[in-house]
Amino acid sequence: MRAASAALVAFCVIAGGAVQAQEPVGAAIFKTCQPCHSLDPAQAGMAGPHLAKLGGRVLGSAEGFDYSPAFRAAKARGLAWDRERLLSYLADPDAVVPGGWMSLPAGVSAADRAAVTDYLLGK
Image (cartoon, rainbow, N blue to C red; front, side, top):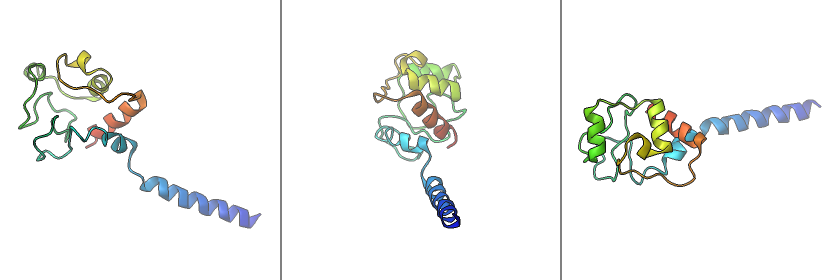
């Protein structure tokens, strides 16, 4: 009995360490965004703007990116990224910024959108 308990405790410690060592779910999901977006503000020439320090940033305001007229209009209105706006945008970009030039990969679930939103707003 003690040997079985010790083995179970050892397994839980090892498994727990493995879980802690894994990257956050949002980081893993963000990898699907990386063909177009970076978290490095210095990385230029991508299809989309960098997403570093996104929380609270005014839409269409990343330096050096040529935004669509729709994003320039959102910037002029002073709209900023927050959790609700980003969640809504990831669910339906055209509902938040009509004509914003972004399409989403197919099959992104609400849980995935929440995870990547939390990840991006924490960066």
